Image (cartoon, rainbow, N blue to C red; front, side, top):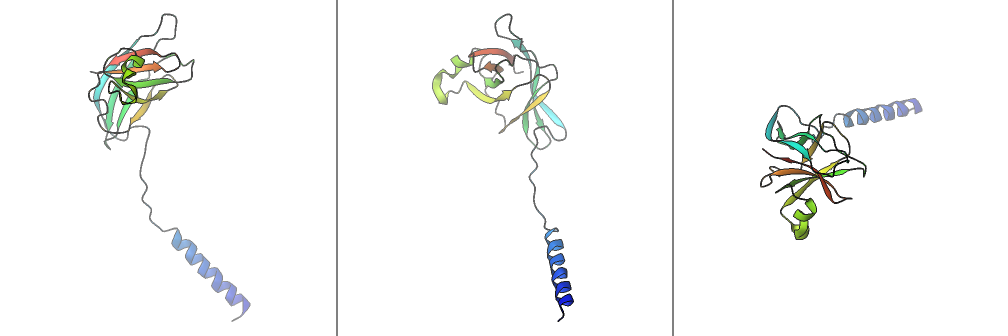
Length: 158
């Protein structure tokens, strides 16, 4: 076998391996921070300010929704606003609109509140709820400043 033939055979074998590896089928799990497809509204609420006068108000509307894949979200509407001087505001499902620090008084196993996530900007946004019906048993969404240990706002869930 000549050198050119060996080179051609090696090149051909490499091309076959390369092209055959590109046809491998992989399963990709779709994950999204926004709803996919049609959504169903499960709960709604209007946020009212709870923090001291003179501080930026936490106001707007929110909904708990479920998308066509069954994923549930807490959706803050485009009119959502809050004070972000400490960087983020914690979001909780809660039994009442009382101060979160008081509702958490039972320690790490307290059942009066459930942490949902954090927000750091105004406007429309979606928080993925990792589980189904995490809001069950809770009557409010509370926006809480962990640094100052005060509620910034709360919305009854209807």
